[in-house]
Length: 415
Image (cartoon, rainbow, N blue to C red; front, side, top):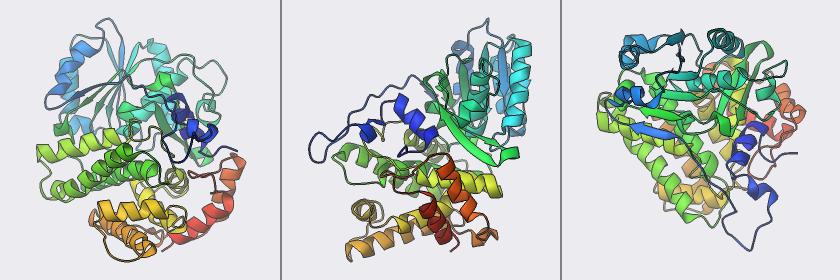
């Protein structure tokens, strides 16, 4: 049984970071062996969309993918089209915030029909995740492309993908995996491949000025939890990675209230955007144990109840930390001392205060932290727990979270 959930394990394995599960510790507390490689070209800053013309080959036929049309209201669409004027372009819109398999397959058919050479995702992480899946499914030879997600079959080919990001959250712009939903089956699953890295990602903080508060808050929560999944595990000989993770967390905490007061502050938007990228480009996870249980349980809540991804994470993380307090105690104390400046009390008291401070931070963003806040009761908890057994998954950095533990954590999520 895998210690990490299959989809995330697939991504971590191909970056070399999963070795700690299979490689015996050399001696004592030390970093595990790892191989780090990230081929994504990041083009960051004001006016960077104009760089598109040099990033995509002129003879490529490009499919531009996007979501509900916000890029046409905020001017990003016009910038992209102006920059690519004279190119052979096809559009595919309507990709959902949790990209749906059925929608994406329509895009796959259109891309095949139009003989697309390049996919350009313009929008948030969901649009890019959808483009990554489409890029893989276009060349998938087996009958059911859902196997890419559900069974983690390795890819042999994919259409190249690029991104113009307008929502800092998922970190998808600098990694090789994606999360896809299938409403008919009530599933939300992930896959990863070296072929799914974007060729480039354009990050212009000005494109985020018009985001609704809810999306900004969800994005901050997502970035925060991406970081804690790689940081709040066990004490290891990795002080650099710890401090890199802590820098992201501290920056999020400092910048979050500023963006709510001054949504057009370029510096604040730039800091948040770069935090989101740094949280999930693999760097802070090099050679350290990782958790990801919060994300995997959160995906199930989103699939079952339609919660925003950020909302689901804000519900699960505090409950999981309470449940796993004994296993994570040393790191929770470090988290409390370094992030929340907690200096008094026993180790257990510091851990409790750190969790409470995290909850208060989510509340300051306007994000609720219990299932009761969303009028969700315990129905379906047992089914959710059994789902992980059916997928042969044991969650957490120690592989100690199975169906019973998932149910217990969900009960704590009630509030």
